[in-house]
Length: 89
Image (cartoon, rainbow, N blue to C red; front, side, top):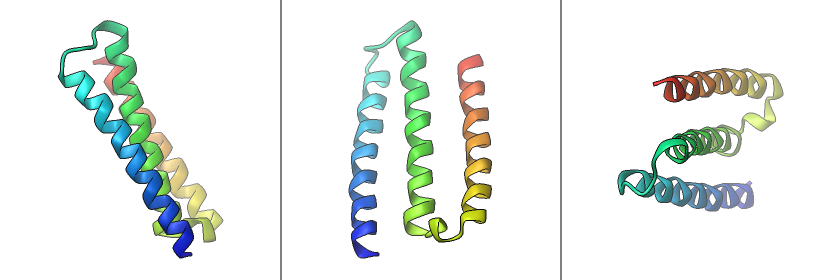
C-alpha cells in the first residue's frame, strides 16, 4: 500500500509540474491560436488523469470495481463536458 501511495504521489508531482509548465506558457503569451486551445485541452486532460489517480490510489477505488467504474464514468463525462465548453468558448 505505502509503495503504491508513494508512486502515486510522485506521479501527481510530475503531472502537477507539467500542468504548471503548460499554464505558465499560456499566461506568458507564448501561445496563440490552435496551440493555445491544444494547451488548454492538455491541462484539462492532466487534471482528469490526476483526479483518476487520486480516486484509485488514495481512496482505493481500485479495490471496488463497481464504484471505480461509476466514478470513472462520472468523472469522464464531467471532464468531457468541460473540454467541450472550453473548446467552444
